[in-house]
Amino acid sequence: MVEPGRKVVITGVGALTPLGIGASTLFDGLLASRSGARIIERFDTTHHATHFAAEVRGCVYVAEDHFTKQVSRRMDPFTQIGVLAAREAWKDAGFDAPAAVPERAGCIMGTGIGGITSIFEQYDVLAASGPRRITPFFIPNVMANGLPANIAIEFGLRGACFLTASACASSGHAIGMAMREIRAGRADLMVTGGSETTTNALCLAGFNSLKALSTRNDDPEGASRPFDRDRDGFVMGEGAAALVIESEEHARARGARIYCELAGFGQSDDAGHITAPDDTALTPARAMTLAMEDAGLNPSDIDYVNAHGTSTLLNDMVETKAIKIAMGEEHARRVWISSSKSMIGHLVGAAAAAESVVCALSLHRGVAHPTKNYTTPDLEHGCDLDYMPGDPRERALRATLSNSLGFGGHNVSLAFRRHS
Image (cartoon, rainbow, N blue to C red; front, side):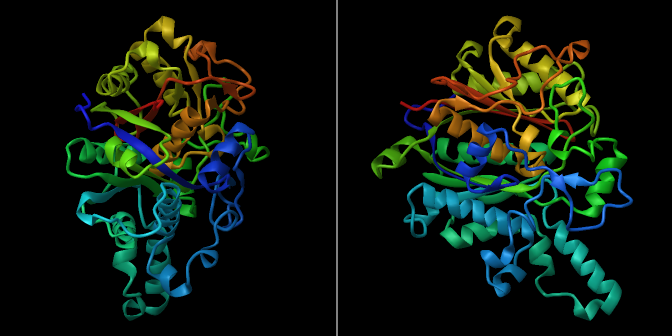
């Protein structure tokens, strides 16, 4: 439970997603039902089953627009876009200089895979030119912890600084652990979130081999169909998102604008299959229940759930069942549920971070986005809740949940509450 006087609030948000650069660009795009899915042009997909993804590199993000060549050589693309998201969040929180008390500030970020682009690039150099041509930046670039390390260097954050890696739940774990640093009194503020750039030929082939990706190549924008009967897999995405979180007293003392309270964190593991979720739904439901308990919320207090909502049959079935278990059948049928992945694809290790930004802005603005492409209910598989087809819905939301169900059986749920 929250310790008295140690409430944690969100004061800054940043994002770089397939919908564009900026947290407002992300949220406004979701409200407008814009899709970031498009045909891949960065590499040849001729022999792949899937020819599209929700990318940022080459269409939304060009390194030269944000970093000098010298700086970009020292950071893998996943670190670059993570740093950009953190910069936006830092500025949005009202900071224009490094942390005033560096020992009381830290950075915890998440990623599923990390610097895979640098691995590919330097493997090609090794094969073509030999070991002496490998860049001295190779190891720092492929280190997943290069992401929080570079953010800490930029903002002078000398408190807890590390990275979490739990597949699709990575940045959910990062945000939860960052919240705990503040609650425990070890920090006053933290930068947290996640980043991922896995849209490459090998990852595309790997997910296709798992039969996890949509192959709706004639309609990329209509391919991600969470909870819909006609789904055929998820859409690979990439991007980054960051939050600045603070103790409430620290935020109030400096007159910060507060988006909402980061109120609860719940986690569990299926301890079952490495890719398939727990078909009883008991363990993901437990993560949701623990998040609500941690926040001091009852199921009836939750107005909106930002679902993991991948657009795969097993996930959609299990998550629906988990919501019913955690909320109770009656309230589960009243709560609004939507999936950001229907428009930005699956950002893997950055998914929970982007969806946390969405929850914060939903509470702050009093509006929730719809699920794009949800047209045909999948009653056969028990997906019979309110997945918000059509238009955005306005309401003074009281509290929200954000769910993440990752490969490896990692379940995270984060609870957010309107701040007053």
